[in-house]
Length: 112
Figure 1 (cartoon, rainbow, N blue to C red):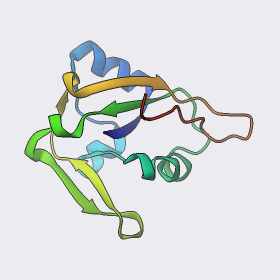
Figure 2 (figure 1 turned 45 degrees about the horizontal axis):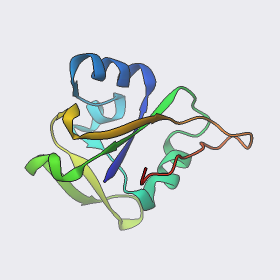
Figure 3 (figure 1 turned 30 degrees about the horizontal axis):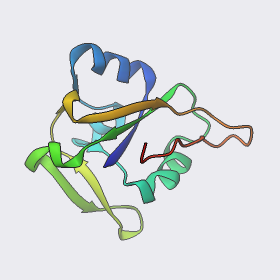
């Protein structure tokens, strides 16, 4: 399982269309950024600090096909990048990603 943090309006549009083509940074970089469960906290803190109205989406990486590449990024860790769009049939769940009282995002249990 890999995870995508996405602004809620963009995710709602993807649900309407049945396909996710990416958010702003994805479109700029030419691939969809994902994180593993272990990378999720740092991704939320570094790239989405203080942002509200976000959704956390769990995606079955085995359903993404050959466009999914594991590439070195932050600190040399391998991050999942998808070159292309994905059908929402690969989504296992999506949940709100609220800010907690400390200003950090409250991550749901990823395995659920």
